[in-house]
Length: 394
Image (cartoon, rainbow, N blue to C red; front, top):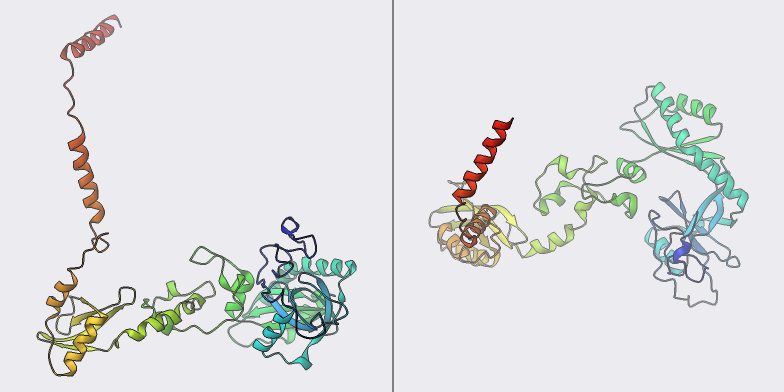
């Protein structure tokens, strides 16, 4: 794994001038971590912490115990304890921030494995050799599963650092019978087989891609935890429940629906309930739309739902107070006339704003342009005579 030596600070440790705290080891690494506590020394006598975070194949991370006498920095390739052998990973986080992450993820100290040593060149060569085989193994595993008519999809393959085990990640709707499949995999790959089922969100995180926003998928770049997303998030944001627009590449609701949900919930606290019914002089009116950005609620009559009328939230609260006293409000038509007194300078609500501008500019151009002078009739006659002479010669 190369380092970004062009932006290193003093050569050691290498990194983008963050003294090894950027957590990448090379630029544009997926799920990188910035250690914002890298410059803070612990209050204890020990300089180095005894816990580190190690990254495997960019999307799997785990915590390990390290000997304080052998300090490690971010970006170091290490050999760690694994089932039936050792694994190779890259140090992604060190220092006091590791304890905060362990507390956040509720990691038990007695279940942590150890770091053996820094990876030697031989360890790195074996590790890279097995990583180069992963794509071919994934294709072969898909062929075997298809030959057995199993309703599953192999999404990713990961070899252990020493090659003693291979983990196959798959997605499936129901349960899969692995009895014959594991036998065929063991014969084909000649190593220990580990099958792990993942969800469709985890699959899209491993595969990656471009979202509808034009950027890389959040799950494949920086998003590590997948919170549940439901249609209530779309309703709070006044979005139409359209599965084709709300679904991501994984086929589930987009994770970004949760990003601004808290902001919308806080803004809707000042709004009256969408079930509000106004008693007007023309009859009952109910809410049909909520505009969070303009701080308005749209109402329509129960007997005439074609016409919609916007009302500001502050004015709506006054109308609700009048209804609470038993006083009917004025018709929505008159309330709409008051709201229309506001000048729309940019003509945002005018559908024909572009046509008017073009017409006005054309009129101005016609006024400013000078009238064309009539052509000289003598020149026209001379041109016609020259043309006739040419025709006679021919």
